Image (tube, rainbow, N blue to C red; front, side, top):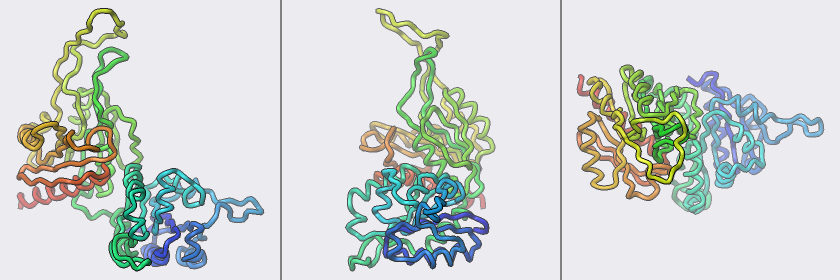
Length: 407
């Protein structure tokens, strides 16, 4: 399953660097193509000769192959070559530089050029791992789409016991295998996601909208793809870049446009996630020209927009799964449960505006997932990428329940 897959392995200055040699060996045995980039600090722990021998490719340690001849390493080509970039071990220093966009070595320069998924496997001492700055870097990197392969607990080089050990090579190898050949029950499922806001025109200049950014919906699309699903994303106006080629994106602007595009794909979807913040109302009349300001009041008559989730709930077959979102300010759980029933959802994801750092515009979120069977699973405040994975895992359980009920 890894045959021919191109993997770029970065190694930084950590005692865990020796584990990277074992990982390279496993990847090569699985017939992957591996190129290794070493930071200057990593050379205190492993040698280019070892890595070039194991990877069957020259180990890259500098910007130049032969500086006197002006022969240089093309970091852009490296970034485009790879199907996956994995930095293991990733030191606290490298993680901080990645977050800040610092590129003072060939590994970091290549990272900035990478167009493939980038993962990091942190390795550091306990006090460094638990430092607030490191924690902030983890959240910021996840927000930028970097996957953190969380460190394990155990005895550390300093003699302390706690979190900071890089995952073992066998664990990392398994994660890479699963990425290229997911074994999730969601593999090859058709997942339809609505995301972002809608904008309802008043005139050619002005519109009615809301503060949704689409971050949560895009994070969900990325997470479902990692589990092997086929994803179609109906995305309202958003500045969030969707860089996964496996995600089919359909840009829409208004609630009517979102409804029509959702209808187009709904019947063929196995799972539909309604994460979009659809405007409840739109202007009844839209001016052809910009409305001029006057001294008198301006009155706009609004008409109700279609409820996309409700309409799809009425069309839903017994084999389909619909998951909604609810943003509430009071009686949150009670109101979410009412929506779950009214819109024929199998589950609903509840956001509360009472939770700091959650909801529109934030890189973090805190949710409660409520199923039709009254199962409630709540998260702590975490990156939207991690919340998306929680929702995907919950969806796996719903699919298993659906299969069991038909047996």
